[in-house]
Image (cartoon, rainbow, N blue to C red; front, side, top):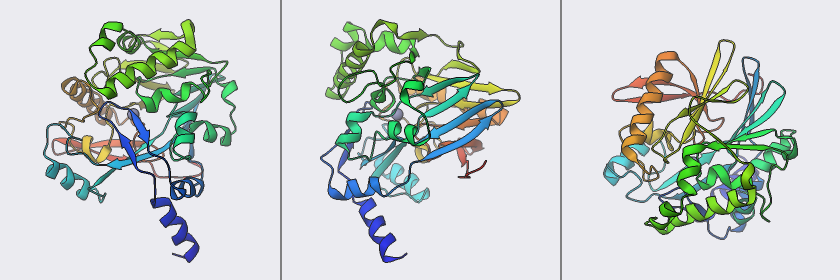
Length: 334
Ligand SMILES: [Zn+2]
């Protein structure tokens, strides 16, 4: 490693102190100069591949690293979790989650699936998170040319990018389509009143603020509905009550965009029975996970995971009581 690349690497590791709460809220402490240099020292993550006639772009929104809490997995000991991280050659004291929204070009329509943390988080984290809009532009697309945004669920890293830092719609000409059950849950005053933690209250407030800005034009979809050309919704509840995945099919090619059916692959793909602290109903989440992954294995379907390592695509195989992710390898011309 040259002196230059070593310096750049060290700067990149000196990231801000960052926290992610149990229910999907992501926050960054004031970023150090190191964090800023780290974000500036990386190239935009844009990966292109075809699903039949549909063009798919994986576009990174960045990442969030935070100290591992003992309850990150609620039904296993901290030692078991440390061991699983060690087996994946990962640090045991820290969790890093990457964020990768999807862009599709299908039948002449430009479609975005999930939006990253958004512009406010981009500024707050000095560019470590919330990169999606910058990288969308780097990929050659203007947010104003997006026709439709599809949302998997209402956590900050998925809906934050729907609005700008000054509270305007970030995709001004786009239709916004969200799972009906998800919208119903987060916009319900009774559910808001029953919120038991600060983080849950923050999630309710964020959803109300964002969908307040977007207004009545937001479209709500049910499961098994064609939500865009070649894109069908699939109910995968548990992580949140109305969590949705999407099946993308063209010709003989198929891809499933899973959203947060699992967050960290080394933990919850290897051990689908482990319950993540961010899963609101962990038993239902496990059922959705096993249902989806058994199908993905049996039909050898390509899977896109919002929190998978970039380009956030891979296949699954069965292993012991769990699964193993075989990631798609980076290739500039797949
Ligand atoms: Zn997420």
